[in-house]
Amino acid sequence: MPTIGSGSRTWLVVAALLGGLAVAFGAFGAHGLKARFPADDPMLANWETAARYQMYHALALLAVALLVAKNGSRLLHMAGLSMTIGTLIFSGCLYALVLTGQRRLGAVVPLGGVLLIVGWILLALAAFRNTSA
Image (cartoon, rainbow, N blue to C red; front, side, top):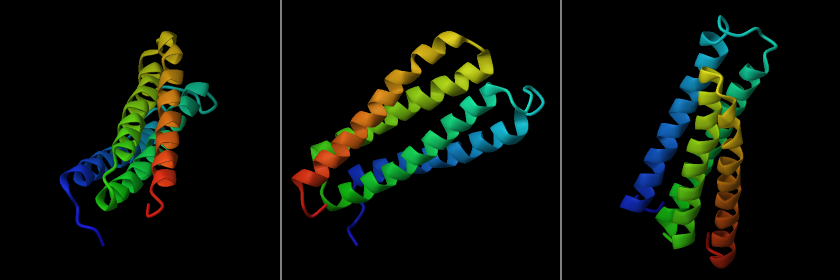
């Protein structure tokens, strides 16, 4: 097992924080928002989507952390950064949209989605360039 260096540790911490917060936000959405919205309100679906995508990318960042420990390529760090910023924008704007009702935030969400896609492409490029990944 590779040792955990500072670059790998950073991605591990980010992944753990995003994952833990995804669980907390998901629970808040499932229990705390019930009094605020009817069960069939699309805003609850937006909240659930935000929490789900946040968790998916927390898990992806765990993979980035492990791969960085093995081979700290610049592409892997760029993938982690893109996924982190993308998650903050995508999920963060959806959470804020639900809590504030500011529909304009919905226009920013796709920017986060693009960054998430870029992160996955960078991860694929890193794997392609390094057959030991």
